[in-house]
Length: 314
Image 1 (cartoon, rainbow, N blue to C red):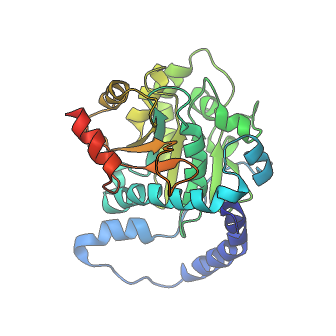
Image 2 (image 1 turned 90 degrees about the vertical axis):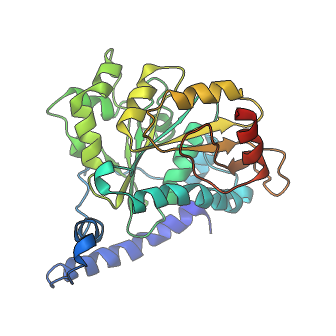
């Protein structure tokens, strides 16, 4: 059963779970230990309904996504699903082990340059995270110049992030779209705006995104522009609680990656996905996760690739 098919299969399970949670709300909850009471209350509290549009539901069609090249061919889907399980674990660990007030569940996915696979990563990672029990995932199209996420899901012309950020009368319930995969939502880029960077940098946009991430069970995944191409990427990275940078193996120069990482605030956790690795025989599809050093926080399992990258960076 494919990644998307399994997610759709969970619809009935999610419905039953939410009904059980609604029933449990009327019963007194056990008091957690004093030293962890605040964090436990934040994580264990029943999920507040995500405000979203009621007039449209996005249909997730695997064949259409394959035709667009944003999910793996059916023959490779199981293998790629395992890759994204590896990628998401460090991100979830950071989210789980830090104070919710740090908003580590607000994740920017970027790259140094165009064409490295950040949108492919954003979509597949969002679908994988949507399989996590007790989680909600909002995929945000923060690449307002290219709008790949918006286009792939057929949401061109729909109001989105820029509309909500520019117009005080446009709120999340007017822009966030539910999908037919339970716990998976999409926030399109929105209508083109000449002052897109200023809108993204505004306090209103920051407030909207942190509002989305205020529920610690919810993961807000932002597909941003490449770091070294537009100023919008830096704005989105600054708003995020952690950053995932996609690097195309054997093509992106090391010094370019270093520049992109150094453009991110020093206190921001940064993880790197080494994409399209063709030399590892056990990974036919060519996607590999690994953590680099570069003097910055990084996550991932140790490997020969990681060691070489660290040694070369010294």
